[in-house]
Length: 108
View 1 (cartoon, rainbow, N blue to C red):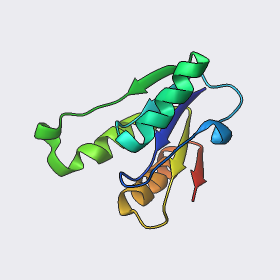
View 2: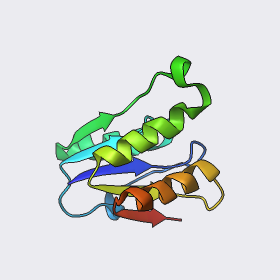
View 3: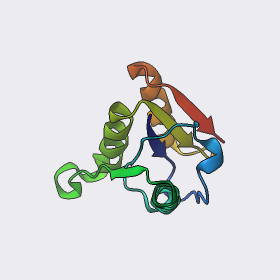
């Protein structure tokens, strides 16, 4: 199963292991540093493919992060979203998952 992992830029995610389903074949991130470290650690210790979907920041400007996250959830079979209950960008992505029919798990 391909899992997209999303979190606000200022939220620290130390571990993702306990939130993932039993079978993970690929982890997709939008390139946020806070999630990259935890995702990289999990993937490297379990032989899971790690994919970072990065957009051109110069071309897309402020919408770059949204585009990266949307690309990640569209590519994935499921989204694992860490949310602080405040970040509007993350809330938007949660709503977008519902609109495009991507199963999600939100960790608050």
